[in-house]
Image (cartoon, rainbow, N blue to C red):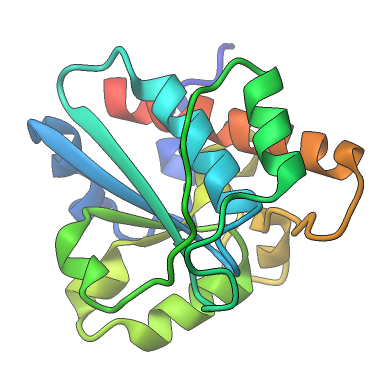
Length: 191
């Protein structure tokens, strides 16, 4: 059986906030914000991929942005290998790193975390239950990981490994993980 959003929503332990999520697909515009640590490796790749994966959607139109929980790289371009892997895969995107700010919760419908540490930092910044409902692990949209509870013993399996300082092969592996999740995200939006 083909794994579609409808086939696996009942197993989505990571989406404890389905009541919040379901109506988002009916909005004219869905604003998504992707968060990693420094906003130069994983989240820019995810930004490029999600923009490419959703560019033909019109209802809702998906707007994508990204940032990091840390301020080390604010104003910098994406890491060289990040840019190389998304460009080699055919994605177009221009990036300047920025730090996540708590007012981003009000500007975006979904806040997608790249790893559990990012998620925990975001939960600490959340000022309301509404803010917390917006925080989801990016890879929770991957059908093969939709059964994983980020608070459970296998929660770390939802983390996208940080390739910072690593080889081009590590960045390409991250791209594949992100593309799989982006495919699931697009299926969710279309369902």
